Length: 638
Ligand code: PLP
Image 1 (spheres, rainbow, N blue to C red):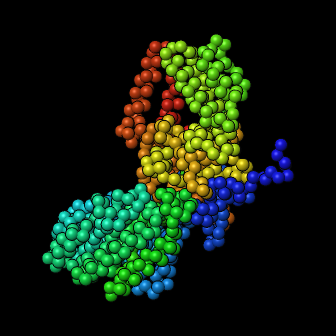
Image 2 (cartoon, rainbow, N blue to C red):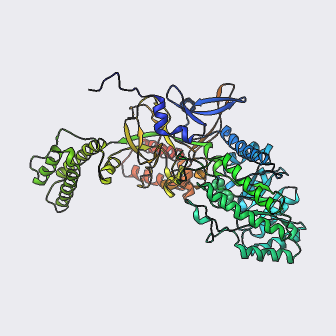
Image 3 (cartoon, helix red, strand yellow):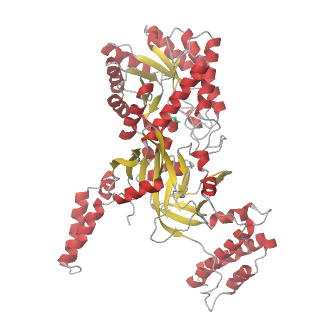
């Protein structure tokens, strides 16, 4: 028996430690003494932590169902201020003569609310926008009217795109057209001549430095974006031949997203700086050095260059890159350029949290009773039972091999019609019980094979979450991205279950089985046993970047409800509620016409009345249910 005096009671600190919240939260999230996750908002300039449980209570009172996406404009504001202030500080520390003019890349989260809040929060820094397509430019022209901020136009451009940008410039906006292919320059100069305006031109360089990580292919010699060195020369000669070299103002590069190693960013910046200097020497006025995106977010919370982490922070990023640019341009006697960066992920990732409730749990439990053993069973089943009864700590591997062998033999016997479904059912029950016993024994052993260590990951619970991986965290599926995930309450209690999280799309890829761990990653998440009739709510954090944009309608699971949260005079304020997709909405995205669907179903119901399968009154009830279904949320209600 354990000595009660020495058994340490589980505390919120233990929960903080196992979920690694201090490492990934950037001080935006914490755990209060009630064991609930809090978000650090601002109330009239003062820090004001708000419990996510209190927020969800208000949502439930308002009838907002799970899953729900919460957005916090305070966090967005804080990120924009932090990036701008860090650059300005790094510049002033080394007497840098230029300034910083960041732009937010719309593609990272192009929701109306996000663009509006980014432009409003960034106003005092003249924080601009980056666009990569015509629709993004159209949105940018409606939101960005600051004549001192930039709109950077990347991506391939047709004459319509170019003339829109040039008209914007005519109206006093600073719009830079970035040349991505040698052929673009002719078209830009042609359209500019027609409109009678001198365009602001940029060149995107294809560097030989690679970014590393998942987006490695967006950079380096084989990248599909930007101009290589001979193409840059070709473009310069063309611009010069048309007498337009005074239009060339900016050099741009982008090493890829989530660059986890500062060394790659330093190398890329040095290489691009060398190109910048030579463009000045070629006679271009220049003045703008655009270092692209790539500033990483530390999803995993560990300070290393693993894919979900980052071995640097914003301050280090700004300091290191400004030092390189200053030194390289000073050495070449070239004036310090103004710096533009296109950080997206680092600006919006913290902004949103997805909250979902757990609908059900599938547990594999050891059954010590041997109940249900069919009377007349095959002798192989007795061999499997012997393994179960005589498990020996010193022979775990041998016991495991035997169990697998007999389980496979019994499966074969079933396929050949020798044993019954009941015998096979009992086989599975006893096999999983053996694995449970082995997994517990392995915990106490020092030297065991990887195969045995892996068992605990195959016998975990499955928690079914009321959300869609494909709609709300597509990168968890598409590129195995790590996101911090934890329950938002009950953090004073020890989580005693090991689980993976399945969504409700009934797709075997709709599972999350990579989780943050203080010592690296883990394949299971520690969770609490669910209590019947009580919600168990889990949060997926740092989902503000790319996830909403990339989410798809797999299994026709639509957009979730969205709510913006802030605090005013000590009260939680709920605003900008956006209703998630209804079933009729998602069906219409797949080109079904809800009215036609209703008509078709009505025909079925009428036929059933004619054939006396249902009464006319029953038909009315059935039709009402169908219509309510069409109007309803795509996720599960209570
Ligand atoms: N700029 C360009 C040209 C991009 O393609 C991207 C996205 O990959 C970004 C900026 C944003 O990058 P990040 O979100 O890593 O800051």
